[in-house]
Structure formats: C-alpha cells, structure tokens
Image 1 (spheres, rainbow, N blue to C red):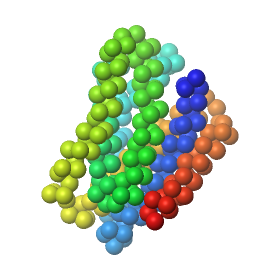
Image 2: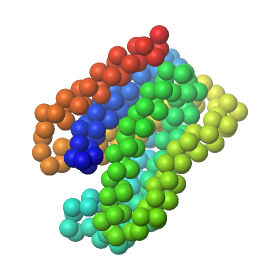
Image 3: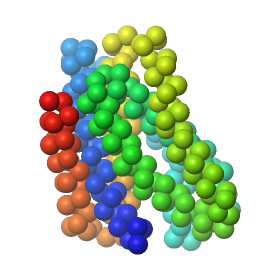
Length: 219
C-alpha cells in the first residue's frame, strides 16, 4: 500500500527540495557573501559531487522491475552509495543549522522527505535480490544512522574550521546536491510510468509548504 503512493511522496519531496534551494539556500548564501557569483560554482560543485557518487558508487543502481538489472551485485554497492549519501545529508543539516535555525529546519525536512522514499526503494530492491530480512534491517539501520552521525561529527568541527565565506559556500554546495537529487532522481522516478496530475499537485504542495512554512519558521 505504501509503495502505491510513493510517487506522490517523491513529487512532494522534490517540490520541497527545489523550493528550498531557490527560496532559502542560494539567497542566504549570496547574502552572506554580498552576492559573490562564486557561490554558483559551489552549487555546481554540489551538483557534480552527487552526479559522480550516483554514477561511480551506483547510488541508485537499478529498479526492481528492471529485467536487465544484475540483482546479485547490488546489495553491498547500494549500501555503500546510500551510506555515503546519508553522511552527506547529515553534513547538509549541520551546515543549515549553523547558518540559522530556520534554514536548518528546512534542510532537515528536505533530507527526511527524500530519504523516506529512498529507504522504501532500497528495501524493495534488497528483498527482490533475496537478501534475508535480518541483513536488510541492519543495512537500513546503518544508512539511517549515517545522517545524524554526519550531522553530529560535522557540527563538532564546524565552528572551529569555517569562516562565513566557507559556510556560505557549503550552503550553496548543499543547494547543488538538493537540486541534483530532486531533478535527477526524485522527479524522473515520480513520473517514470506516467505523467500524473496528482504528482504535479504533490510537487506544487511541496513548493507551497516551503513558502508558507518558511515564513512562519523565520518569523
């Protein structure tokens, strides 16, 4: 039943992430460095990092209904990719909260919304690959723990090693990673089988949540 509605959640999550990028993360980054255009290079770097992670560590190696997928190879590879991705998500949350409470909350919301459907997806792939339930549980647990672990470790380092310019750059880096995940993973998957008006509505709802919720969070 959950899987039946996953594409709506994907559309909603992508709306939240894309709106967060353009309404909060990039504007905040530019404000911190007086509109320095170098911020966009940081954003491009974030986009490129996740592109490389996905294509060389195989973050999303295949879908379970892909007949050409070599299911016996994906278990460890999928785990490694998701673990690294989750660590980076934790770093993104730590950076957001270092900038402001409002940015941190919106960043954390974006991370939670896109990790939930990814968790469902990877569990389905591992089940289809005939991995045992105990192994799937522990791999999923480690991936889930990676996000708070990344946030805690980076938060301990953050005040000591970063000046405002670097912090602004990392915020833009986060924006680039969010943009990649939303545009390259979530939206294509949401519309993979068909263009659905309800998915579009879910996307718009995600965008609206950031506009409305962001106003209350910051005020």
